Length: 445
View 1 (cartoon, rainbow, N blue to C red):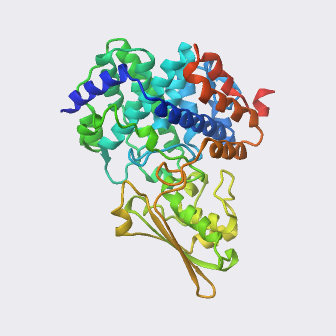
View 2 (view 1 turned 180 degrees about the vertical axis):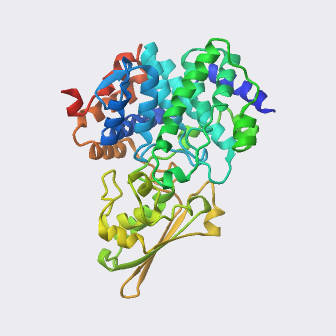
View 3 (view 1 turned 45 degrees about the horizontal axis):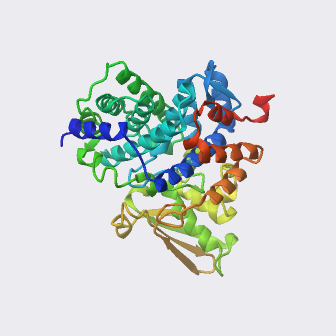
Protein backbone atom coordinates (compact mmCIF):
# COMPACT_ATOMS: atom_id res chain seq x y z
CA UNK A 1 0.00 0.00 0.00
CA UNK A 2 1.00 3.60 -0.53
CA UNK A 3 1.49 5.97 2.41
CA UNK A 4 -1.97 7.44 1.79
CA UNK A 5 -3.60 3.99 1.69
CA UNK A 6 -1.80 2.86 4.85
CA UNK A 7 -2.79 6.04 6.63
CA UNK A 8 -6.41 5.54 5.55
CA UNK A 9 -6.38 2.05 7.06
CA UNK A 10 -4.79 3.39 10.22
CA UNK A 11 -7.46 6.09 10.47
CA UNK A 12 -10.22 3.49 10.27
CA UNK A 13 -8.55 1.44 13.00
CA UNK A 14 -8.13 4.45 15.31
CA UNK A 15 -11.74 5.61 14.94
CA UNK A 16 -12.99 2.20 16.09
CA UNK A 17 -10.16 1.34 18.49
CA UNK A 18 -10.79 -1.16 21.24
CA UNK A 19 -8.12 -2.92 23.27
CA UNK A 20 -7.88 -6.06 25.42
CA UNK A 21 -7.63 -5.80 29.21
CA UNK A 22 -3.91 -6.49 29.37
CA UNK A 23 -3.23 -3.57 27.04
CA UNK A 24 -5.33 -1.25 29.18
CA UNK A 25 -3.40 -2.42 32.24
CA UNK A 26 -0.15 -1.42 30.56
CA UNK A 27 -1.72 1.92 29.59
CA UNK A 28 -2.40 2.55 33.29
CA UNK A 29 1.29 2.05 34.07
CA UNK A 30 2.44 4.28 31.21
CA UNK A 31 -0.03 6.97 32.23
CA UNK A 32 1.26 6.88 35.81
CA UNK A 33 4.80 7.30 34.55
CA UNK A 34 3.84 10.19 32.26
CA UNK A 35 1.97 12.05 34.98
CA UNK A 36 4.61 11.51 37.64
CA UNK A 37 7.58 12.35 35.45
CA UNK A 38 5.82 15.49 34.18
CA UNK A 39 5.43 16.62 37.78
CA UNK A 40 9.12 15.94 38.47
CA UNK A 41 10.08 18.07 35.49
CA UNK A 42 7.61 20.80 36.43
CA UNK A 43 9.33 21.20 39.81
CA UNK A 44 12.61 22.27 38.19
CA UNK A 45 13.50 25.98 38.51
CA UNK A 46 13.81 26.48 34.76
CA UNK A 47 10.33 25.08 34.18
CA UNK A 48 8.88 27.43 36.81
CA UNK A 49 10.65 30.34 35.10
CA UNK A 50 9.25 29.28 31.72
CA UNK A 51 5.70 29.14 33.09
CA UNK A 52 6.11 32.63 34.52
CA UNK A 53 7.42 33.95 31.20
CA UNK A 54 4.67 32.19 29.23
CA UNK A 55 1.83 34.02 31.02
CA UNK A 56 -0.63 31.37 29.88
CA UNK A 57 -4.26 32.36 30.47
CA UNK A 58 -6.31 30.36 32.89
CA UNK A 59 -8.22 27.50 31.35
CA UNK A 60 -9.52 23.95 31.67
CA UNK A 61 -6.28 21.97 31.41
CA UNK A 62 -3.83 21.26 34.25
CA UNK A 63 -0.15 22.04 34.32
CA UNK A 64 0.69 18.79 36.08
CA UNK A 65 2.40 19.46 39.39
CA UNK A 66 2.54 23.20 38.78
CA UNK A 67 -0.42 24.37 40.82
CA UNK A 68 -2.67 25.83 38.15
CA UNK A 69 -4.79 25.20 35.07
CA UNK A 70 -4.33 27.00 31.77
CA UNK A 71 -5.50 26.96 28.17
CA UNK A 72 -5.46 23.65 26.31
CA UNK A 73 -2.61 24.50 23.95
CA UNK A 74 -0.41 25.96 26.68
CA UNK A 75 -0.91 22.85 28.81
CA UNK A 76 -0.04 20.55 25.92
CA UNK A 77 3.17 22.48 25.18
CA UNK A 78 4.37 23.11 28.74
CA UNK A 79 3.53 19.62 30.03
CA UNK A 80 5.29 18.12 27.03
CA UNK A 81 8.44 20.10 27.80
CA UNK A 82 8.35 19.23 31.49
CA UNK A 83 7.81 15.55 30.69
CA UNK A 84 11.05 15.23 28.71
CA UNK A 85 13.19 17.77 30.56
CA UNK A 86 14.92 15.24 32.83
CA UNK A 87 15.15 12.29 30.42
CA UNK A 88 12.92 10.17 32.64
CA UNK A 89 10.03 9.66 30.22
CA UNK A 90 8.90 6.25 28.97
CA UNK A 91 10.23 5.15 25.59
CA UNK A 92 10.10 2.37 23.04
CA UNK A 93 13.17 0.86 21.35
CA UNK A 94 11.14 -0.41 18.38
CA UNK A 95 9.77 3.08 17.71
CA UNK A 96 13.26 4.48 18.30
CA UNK A 97 11.99 7.19 20.60
CA UNK A 98 9.17 8.26 22.90
CA UNK A 99 5.61 7.61 21.64
CA UNK A 100 3.81 8.56 24.85
CA UNK A 101 5.56 11.90 25.27
CA UNK A 102 4.64 12.90 21.72
CA UNK A 103 0.91 12.51 22.25
CA UNK A 104 -0.19 12.13 25.87
CA UNK A 105 0.15 15.82 26.89
CA UNK A 106 -2.07 16.92 24.00
CA UNK A 107 -4.68 14.21 24.57
CA UNK A 108 -4.89 14.88 28.31
CA UNK A 109 -5.19 18.63 27.80
CA UNK A 110 -7.95 18.20 25.23
CA UNK A 111 -9.74 15.63 27.40
CA UNK A 112 -9.76 18.12 30.26
CA UNK A 113 -11.19 20.81 27.95
CA UNK A 114 -13.90 18.53 26.56
CA UNK A 115 -14.56 16.81 29.91
CA UNK A 116 -14.44 13.59 27.94
CA UNK A 117 -15.42 10.19 29.22
CA UNK A 118 -12.75 7.97 30.69
CA UNK A 119 -13.34 5.34 28.02
CA UNK A 120 -12.82 7.88 25.22
CA UNK A 121 -9.72 9.29 26.90
CA UNK A 122 -8.17 5.86 27.36
CA UNK A 123 -8.85 4.98 23.72
CA UNK A 124 -7.34 8.28 22.61
CA UNK A 125 -4.19 7.73 24.68
CA UNK A 126 -3.76 4.27 23.19
CA UNK A 127 -4.30 5.65 19.70
CA UNK A 128 -1.67 8.31 20.31
CA UNK A 129 0.87 5.75 21.48
CA UNK A 130 0.27 3.10 18.86
CA UNK A 131 0.14 5.47 15.89
CA UNK A 132 3.26 7.32 17.04
CA UNK A 133 5.10 4.04 17.50
CA UNK A 134 4.08 2.81 14.05
CA UNK A 135 5.30 6.03 12.48
CA UNK A 136 8.51 5.64 14.45
CA UNK A 137 8.99 2.14 13.08
CA UNK A 138 8.22 3.36 9.57
CA UNK A 139 10.70 6.24 9.72
CA UNK A 140 14.46 5.91 9.44
CA UNK A 141 15.78 9.38 10.12
CA UNK A 142 18.93 10.65 8.47
CA UNK A 143 22.11 10.48 10.57
CA UNK A 144 22.19 13.39 12.98
CA UNK A 145 18.42 13.84 13.21
CA UNK A 146 16.77 13.77 16.63
CA UNK A 147 13.43 11.93 16.90
CA UNK A 148 11.66 14.47 19.14
CA UNK A 149 8.88 16.27 17.30
CA UNK A 150 9.12 14.37 14.01
CA UNK A 151 7.37 11.03 13.46
CA UNK A 152 5.48 11.26 16.77
CA UNK A 153 3.34 14.23 15.76
CA UNK A 154 1.14 11.81 13.81
CA UNK A 155 0.39 10.04 17.10
CA UNK A 156 -0.63 13.26 18.82
CA UNK A 157 -2.96 13.99 15.91
CA UNK A 158 -4.44 10.48 16.05
CA UNK A 159 -5.14 10.70 19.77
CA UNK A 160 -6.80 14.11 19.48
CA UNK A 161 -8.85 12.94 16.49
CA UNK A 162 -10.07 9.93 18.45
CA UNK A 163 -11.03 12.17 21.35
CA UNK A 164 -13.00 14.39 18.94
CA UNK A 165 -14.75 11.25 17.68
CA UNK A 166 -13.85 11.91 14.06
CA UNK A 167 -14.76 9.31 11.47
CA UNK A 168 -12.22 7.12 9.65
CA UNK A 169 -11.45 9.46 6.75
CA UNK A 170 -11.13 12.58 8.88
CA UNK A 171 -8.99 10.69 11.39
CA UNK A 172 -6.71 9.61 8.57
CA UNK A 173 -6.54 13.20 7.37
CA UNK A 174 -5.59 14.35 10.87
CA UNK A 175 -2.84 11.72 11.08
CA UNK A 176 -1.45 12.65 7.67
CA UNK A 177 -1.56 16.35 8.53
CA UNK A 178 0.33 15.66 11.76
CA UNK A 179 2.93 13.74 9.80
CA UNK A 180 3.38 16.81 7.62
CA UNK A 181 4.19 19.01 10.64
CA UNK A 182 7.43 17.30 11.63
CA UNK A 183 10.32 19.26 13.11
CA UNK A 184 13.80 18.76 11.64
CA UNK A 185 15.84 18.83 14.85
CA UNK A 186 19.52 17.92 15.06
CA UNK A 187 20.73 15.46 17.69
CA UNK A 188 23.61 17.76 18.61
CA UNK A 189 21.10 20.16 20.14
CA UNK A 190 20.73 17.58 22.91
CA UNK A 191 24.42 16.78 23.35
CA UNK A 192 25.32 20.48 23.46
CA UNK A 193 22.57 21.22 25.99
CA UNK A 194 20.18 23.34 23.94
CA UNK A 195 16.69 23.17 25.54
CA UNK A 196 15.10 23.67 22.12
CA UNK A 197 15.26 19.87 22.09
CA UNK A 198 12.61 19.84 24.86
CA UNK A 199 10.50 22.38 22.99
CA UNK A 200 10.26 20.00 20.03
CA UNK A 201 8.12 17.73 22.20
CA UNK A 202 5.94 20.62 23.30
CA UNK A 203 5.45 21.50 19.65
CA UNK A 204 4.39 17.93 18.92
CA UNK A 205 1.42 18.37 21.23
CA UNK A 206 0.21 21.65 19.80
CA UNK A 207 0.78 20.44 16.23
CA UNK A 208 -1.28 17.34 16.97
CA UNK A 209 -4.08 19.49 18.31
CA UNK A 210 -3.94 21.70 15.21
CA UNK A 211 -4.03 18.72 12.86
CA UNK A 212 -7.07 17.21 14.58
CA UNK A 213 -8.88 20.53 14.57
CA UNK A 214 -8.16 20.99 10.87
CA UNK A 215 -9.65 17.55 10.25
CA UNK A 216 -12.68 18.35 12.39
CA UNK A 217 -13.23 21.46 10.27
CA UNK A 218 -13.08 19.42 7.08
CA UNK A 219 -9.93 21.24 6.01
CA UNK A 220 -7.36 18.43 6.32
CA UNK A 221 -6.62 15.87 3.57
CA UNK A 222 -4.82 12.56 3.49
CA UNK A 223 -2.36 12.67 0.59
CA UNK A 224 0.34 10.43 2.05
CA UNK A 225 2.49 13.39 2.93
CA UNK A 226 4.41 11.33 5.49
CA UNK A 227 6.33 9.70 2.66
CA UNK A 228 7.58 13.16 1.68
CA UNK A 229 8.09 14.88 5.04
CA UNK A 230 9.42 11.92 7.01
CA UNK A 231 10.75 10.10 3.98
CA UNK A 232 12.12 12.29 1.22
CA UNK A 233 13.16 15.18 3.48
CA UNK A 234 14.07 13.66 6.85
CA UNK A 235 15.08 10.11 5.95
CA UNK A 236 13.24 7.14 4.52
CA UNK A 237 9.71 5.89 5.10
CA UNK A 238 8.28 2.37 4.91
CA UNK A 239 4.49 2.72 4.76
CA UNK A 240 3.98 -1.01 5.34
CA UNK A 241 5.00 -0.51 8.99
CA UNK A 242 1.87 1.57 9.59
CA UNK A 243 -0.43 -1.43 9.32
CA UNK A 244 1.82 -4.38 10.18
CA UNK A 245 0.05 -6.65 12.72
CA UNK A 246 -2.55 -3.93 13.20
CA UNK A 247 -4.85 -4.85 16.06
CA UNK A 248 -2.75 -7.81 17.19
CA UNK A 249 0.54 -6.17 18.19
CA UNK A 250 0.40 -3.45 20.81
CA UNK A 251 3.66 -1.57 21.06
CA UNK A 252 2.69 0.00 24.37
CA UNK A 253 3.39 -3.40 25.93
CA UNK A 254 6.96 -3.37 24.61
CA UNK A 255 8.25 -0.06 25.96
CA UNK A 256 10.63 0.81 28.76
CA UNK A 257 10.57 2.89 31.93
CA UNK A 258 13.58 4.76 33.23
CA UNK A 259 15.30 4.73 36.60
CA UNK A 260 18.19 7.01 35.55
CA UNK A 261 17.88 10.69 34.61
CA UNK A 262 19.75 10.33 31.34
CA UNK A 263 19.36 9.36 27.68
CA UNK A 264 18.23 5.76 27.30
CA UNK A 265 21.36 4.94 25.29
CA UNK A 266 23.38 5.56 28.46
CA UNK A 267 21.25 3.40 30.73
CA UNK A 268 22.87 0.02 30.02
CA UNK A 269 26.25 1.53 30.90
CA UNK A 270 24.86 2.84 34.19
CA UNK A 271 23.22 -0.50 34.92
CA UNK A 272 26.44 -2.40 34.23
CA UNK A 273 28.48 -0.07 36.43
CA UNK A 274 25.96 -0.32 39.26
CA UNK A 275 26.04 -4.11 38.98
CA UNK A 276 29.84 -4.06 39.16
CA UNK A 277 29.70 -1.89 42.28
CA UNK A 278 28.16 -4.86 44.04
CA UNK A 279 31.00 -7.22 43.15
CA UNK A 280 33.98 -8.07 45.31
CA UNK A 281 36.97 -6.09 44.16
CA UNK A 282 35.12 -2.96 43.14
CA UNK A 283 36.68 0.12 44.72
CA UNK A 284 35.25 3.45 43.62
CA UNK A 285 38.37 5.29 44.74
CA UNK A 286 40.57 2.92 42.72
CA UNK A 287 38.88 3.24 39.29
CA UNK A 288 41.38 4.46 36.69
CA UNK A 289 39.46 3.76 33.46
CA UNK A 290 36.02 2.71 32.28
CA UNK A 291 35.64 1.19 28.82
CA UNK A 292 32.07 1.28 27.52
CA UNK A 293 31.35 -0.77 24.41
CA UNK A 294 27.94 -0.07 22.94
CA UNK A 295 25.88 -0.24 19.76
CA UNK A 296 26.17 2.24 16.92
CA UNK A 297 23.13 4.27 18.03
CA UNK A 298 24.75 5.16 21.35
CA UNK A 299 28.36 5.51 20.27
CA UNK A 300 28.12 9.25 19.69
CA UNK A 301 27.36 10.21 23.31
CA UNK A 302 31.07 10.53 24.12
CA UNK A 303 31.36 14.09 25.44
CA UNK A 304 33.56 14.35 28.51
CA UNK A 305 32.45 17.88 29.41
CA UNK A 306 28.98 19.31 29.86
CA UNK A 307 27.57 22.80 30.12
CA UNK A 308 24.24 22.02 31.79
CA UNK A 309 22.11 19.08 32.90
CA UNK A 310 20.74 18.39 29.42
CA UNK A 311 24.19 17.96 27.89
CA UNK A 312 25.28 15.85 30.89
CA UNK A 313 22.30 13.54 30.43
CA UNK A 314 23.54 12.88 26.90
CA UNK A 315 27.10 12.10 28.03
CA UNK A 316 27.91 8.45 28.66
CA UNK A 317 31.16 9.49 30.42
CA UNK A 318 29.14 11.63 32.87
CA UNK A 319 26.62 8.86 33.45
CA UNK A 320 29.21 6.08 33.89
CA UNK A 321 31.41 8.19 36.18
CA UNK A 322 28.46 9.37 38.26
CA UNK A 323 27.16 5.80 38.65
CA UNK A 324 30.61 4.52 39.59
CA UNK A 325 31.30 7.17 42.22
CA UNK A 326 27.84 7.91 43.66
CA UNK A 327 25.77 4.80 42.97
CA UNK A 328 22.97 6.61 41.11
CA UNK A 329 22.18 8.92 38.19
CA UNK A 330 19.47 11.13 39.62
CA UNK A 331 17.67 14.33 38.58
CA UNK A 332 19.86 16.19 41.08
CA UNK A 333 23.19 14.42 40.48
CA UNK A 334 25.99 16.94 40.98
CA UNK A 335 27.21 18.36 37.67
CA UNK A 336 30.18 20.07 39.33
CA UNK A 337 31.59 17.11 41.26
CA UNK A 338 35.30 17.30 40.48
CA UNK A 339 35.85 13.60 41.04
CA UNK A 340 33.10 12.81 38.53
CA UNK A 341 34.56 15.28 36.05
CA UNK A 342 38.02 13.71 36.40
CA UNK A 343 36.76 10.15 36.01
CA UNK A 344 34.57 11.11 33.04
CA UNK A 345 37.73 12.09 31.17
CA UNK A 346 38.90 8.50 31.63
CA UNK A 347 35.77 6.91 30.19
CA UNK A 348 36.23 5.50 26.68
CA UNK A 349 33.09 4.94 24.58
CA UNK A 350 33.43 2.75 21.48
CA UNK A 351 31.04 1.09 19.03
CA UNK A 352 31.11 -2.70 18.99
CA UNK A 353 29.90 -4.50 15.87
CA UNK A 354 28.65 -7.52 17.81
CA UNK A 355 26.40 -5.28 19.94
CA UNK A 356 25.13 -3.28 16.96
CA UNK A 357 24.13 -6.55 15.28
CA UNK A 358 21.69 -7.21 18.12
CA UNK A 359 19.56 -4.11 17.42
CA UNK A 360 16.63 -3.43 17.70
CA UNK A 361 15.62 -6.26 20.04
CA UNK A 362 18.58 -5.50 22.29
CA UNK A 363 20.38 -2.30 23.18
CA UNK A 364 23.32 -4.07 24.69
CA UNK A 365 26.38 -2.57 26.38
CA UNK A 366 29.59 -4.07 27.76
CA UNK A 367 31.52 -2.24 30.49
CA UNK A 368 35.05 -2.98 31.67
CA UNK A 369 36.35 -1.15 34.73
CA UNK A 370 40.11 -1.04 35.32
CA UNK A 371 41.49 -0.38 38.80
CA UNK A 372 44.77 1.09 40.01
CA UNK A 373 46.15 -2.35 40.92
CA UNK A 374 45.73 -3.57 37.33
CA UNK A 375 42.65 -5.70 37.99
CA UNK A 376 39.51 -5.43 35.85
CA UNK A 377 35.83 -6.20 36.18
CA UNK A 378 33.51 -6.66 33.19
CA UNK A 379 29.73 -6.77 32.91
CA UNK A 380 27.51 -6.98 29.83
CA UNK A 381 23.79 -6.16 29.84
CA UNK A 382 21.37 -6.84 26.94
CA UNK A 383 18.92 -3.99 27.66
CA UNK A 384 18.40 -1.32 30.29
CA UNK A 385 16.72 -2.25 33.54
CA UNK A 386 13.10 -1.16 33.04
CA UNK A 387 12.79 -2.50 29.50
CA UNK A 388 9.77 -4.76 28.98
CA UNK A 389 12.25 -7.44 27.83
CA UNK A 390 14.72 -7.03 30.70
CA UNK A 391 13.85 -6.52 34.38
CA UNK A 392 10.65 -4.54 33.72
CA UNK A 393 9.65 -2.06 36.40
CA UNK A 394 6.41 -2.67 38.29
CA UNK A 395 3.92 -0.10 39.53
CA UNK A 396 5.49 -0.46 42.97
CA UNK A 397 8.89 0.37 41.47
CA UNK A 398 7.56 3.43 39.63
CA UNK A 399 5.80 4.77 42.71
CA UNK A 400 8.98 4.37 44.76
CA UNK A 401 11.05 6.26 42.19
CA UNK A 402 8.47 9.03 41.81
CA UNK A 403 8.22 9.58 45.57
CA UNK A 404 12.01 9.75 45.75
CA UNK A 405 12.08 12.33 42.96
CA UNK A 406 9.11 14.29 44.39
CA UNK A 407 9.79 14.29 48.14
CA UNK A 408 7.76 17.47 48.68
CA UNK A 409 4.67 16.18 46.86
CA UNK A 410 3.90 12.59 47.90
CA UNK A 411 0.19 13.37 47.69
CA UNK A 412 0.55 14.26 44.02
CA UNK A 413 2.05 10.85 43.32
CA UNK A 414 -0.92 9.26 45.10
CA UNK A 415 -3.33 11.28 42.93
CA UNK A 416 -1.47 10.20 39.80
CA UNK A 417 -1.78 6.57 40.87
CA UNK A 418 -5.51 7.00 41.47
CA UNK A 419 -6.09 8.67 38.11
CA UNK A 420 -4.08 6.02 36.27
CA UNK A 421 -6.29 3.33 37.80
CA UNK A 422 -9.65 5.04 37.66
CA UNK A 423 -9.52 7.00 34.41
CA UNK A 424 -11.03 4.37 32.02
CA UNK A 425 -14.11 4.02 34.22
CA UNK A 426 -14.80 7.71 34.85
CA UNK A 427 -17.95 9.22 33.38
CA UNK A 428 -16.06 12.51 32.95
CA UNK A 429 -12.34 13.10 33.37
CA UNK A 430 -12.10 16.90 33.63
CA UNK A 431 -12.09 17.29 37.41
CA UNK A 432 -9.80 14.31 37.97
CA UNK A 433 -7.25 15.66 35.51
CA UNK A 434 -7.40 19.17 36.93
CA UNK A 435 -6.70 17.69 40.36
CA UNK A 436 -3.28 16.71 39.00
CA UNK A 437 -2.20 20.34 38.95
CA UNK A 438 -1.20 19.76 42.56
CA UNK A 439 1.57 22.28 42.94
CA UNK A 440 4.86 23.15 44.47
CA UNK A 441 4.44 25.10 47.67
CA UNK A 442 5.58 28.46 46.26
CA UNK A 443 2.96 28.35 43.50
CA UNK A 444 0.05 27.17 45.64
CA UNK A 445 0.47 29.83 48.34
